[in-house]
Length: 67
Image (cartoon, rainbow, N blue to C red; front, top):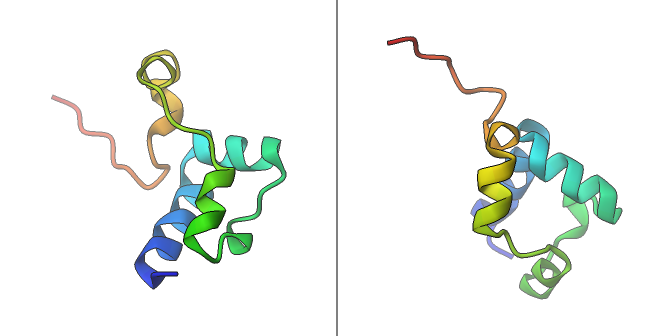
């Protein structure tokens, strides 16, 4: 599998609450996603999920910008 994709999956798990919770609830460790077929283990993301849980999609590395 593409190393860039592995890095994105690992980053998402380590830094984005929604993805960490989703992986954990499904018993998936990012290191077990080794080939493109493994992506089928992950649920599709819906617009309503993003709208309802938008705060859980913010990376913990994101800086807060006050305007």
